[in-house]
Image (cartoon, rainbow, N blue to C red; front, top):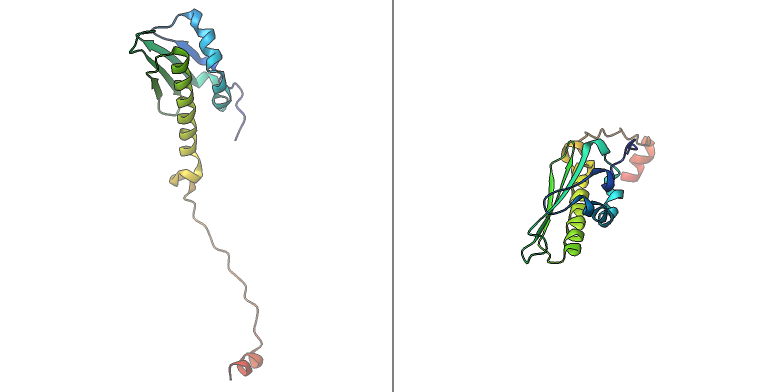
Amino acid sequence: MSAVTNPATVAECLRVGAGFSQGDREWIAEQFGTLDTRLATFHADATELEVSVKDREARGQRVTLECWIAGRQKIVTTSSEIDLRAALNDVRDDLRRKLNDSKTRQEPRNNKHLRDVPVVAEPVDLPEVDQPRAQAETV
């Protein structure tokens, strides 16, 4: 794996959407800090995160975390937890799982197109057998 010159971090890539203010951004970035190690394999310029909440602090609140990484499908995670902190942790953990699954699907061992390389068998040299001795043993 090659090293990324400008690794993505939550603090750099996170946008707050509906239901959150810019004042909430730092607190949310702290909650999502454990994603930094997972995001570090991607370029910061090609990675975006957006978190939003619908009906904040209401019984039917819904937190959504969206992740865009260049060359991959958009990943969306949601949580209906009543506690906002628990909902943020839920979408964070779900995003980490989905990022791991996405990376696993692109590895050769799990991607048939990447691992289908024809294997050429090397010829095996058999030891030469002494003819008179071989005939004597079979008689």
